[in-house]
Image (tube, rainbow, N blue to C red; front, side, top):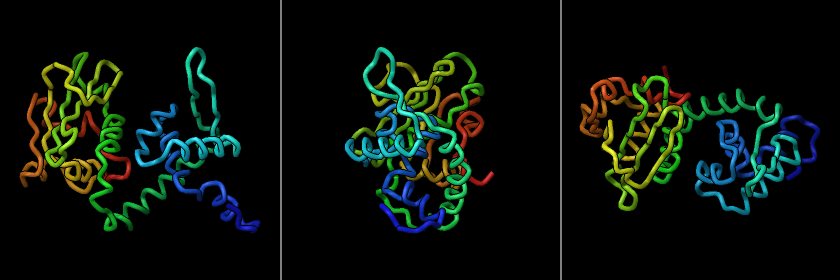
Amino acid sequence: MEFGQFCPIAKATEILGEKWTILILREILMGSSRFNELQRGLSMISTAVLTKRLNALADYELIIKKKIQGQRGHEYLPTSSARELLPIFVDIGNWGMKWTRNNLTDNDFDVDFLMLYLQRSIQTEMLPGKETIIRFHFKELKQQPYWWILVQGNNIDVCTVDPGKEPDVYFTCTVKTLSDIWMGENTYRKAIRNGDLKVVGRSDLTKNITVWMSNCMFAKK
């Protein structure tokens, strides 16, 4: 994609303006470094398009494509030029929170995306003990309505298969309800009072959810 202009906005858009490119960089800047991790955060992207975009970003020196020793595949790591995009992306996100929320549709509430970012929001240092298990039941989902987050020390995993252990906290709601809370457009207290959310489990965890599972960086503090 070329615009034939020396304007720096035009030249930047030639690099960043392709579909998926900004979101790929978002995922890499948020810590995803493996191909399958990137696919998880970008569930609708095809393997071919992701491969093409990653190769282009490496050519533009926005990422480093590094062979993993002793394993198949590569790691994709941000360069300094990519890291300088982070405050710009934050500004775009703040603009989106202000001006685009009315454009959301039911298709935008993706459970895979929600669970990935809830996993990233866990504050392990605020969880007592060596292990915490959180179960989520999304009432509207006919396929895969149950999800688990397993926290063991600093290791956090999302699971779609019952780990066979008693959860410490149970969430029951819709994907949209929990997404709205995480984005700061609703609160746990209001959703529970309105009957949109049920949270049961250990009282030290259910009374202080945002202490150990933070909301989105764009949520109003």
